[in-house]
Length: 287
Image (cartoon, rainbow, N blue to C red; front, side, top):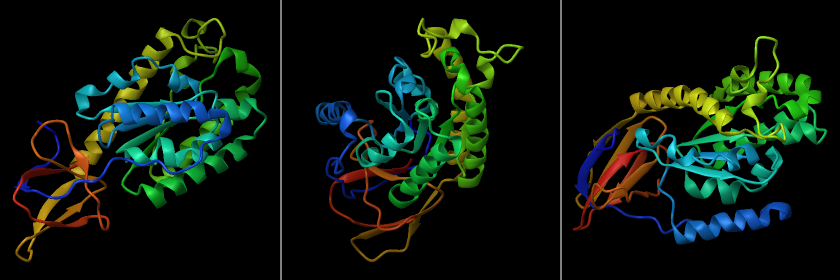
């Protein structure tokens, strides 16, 4: 049974399938187009925990199984050697269509290595935050710190500065900062070499196990806060019309039974929805 409040009602309405409508960065077009083909062949679950970012996310083989116990699907949309500007450019194709409950971002690594300053990288994160507020106001944000790769030791000062700025950014925008860097350092402040592949840049299985150990408490805390704040209520309605209102940051979803086949319902405005009653039975929930 879903951990969120579920109401057995009379049927509502369903949305058509997701439609992508933006132009991806040319250098990643093949990867973005591959995601879209996969979505057509095997549509992802609604309102997932969405991970996006560079190859450190893309290469995380078991990421989509990590949070199955939460009742949320996890979706991996990491791509190439991307930077934060690439995520922003592809926002309408790799983030917005999924209407995620939570989006977890790992970027900044390649940005700094390309010569960008921490301040320039932060401009891209603020752009992402504005995109979320405009297009996905019910989606929460989590940001992972930049990892201290041995092959990029020349950028450690910039990485540390960027991580401090990312932590402040999350406090400012109400996001969750996930510090995956500190647990990767030994007593002298150097990264454990056994966490990395031979290229000394990408994580190996041990590195991802450490990231998993670090991520789970943060995601679990986000879940407990989001769940505690949700309240769904009936509002007095005219015959043939059901009115729902809710307190909390969430997506309204419907299903014809209690399977996992839930569909996002178009919401006229945050926290309120009018639904025309028809003969088919349906369930509604907040995610």
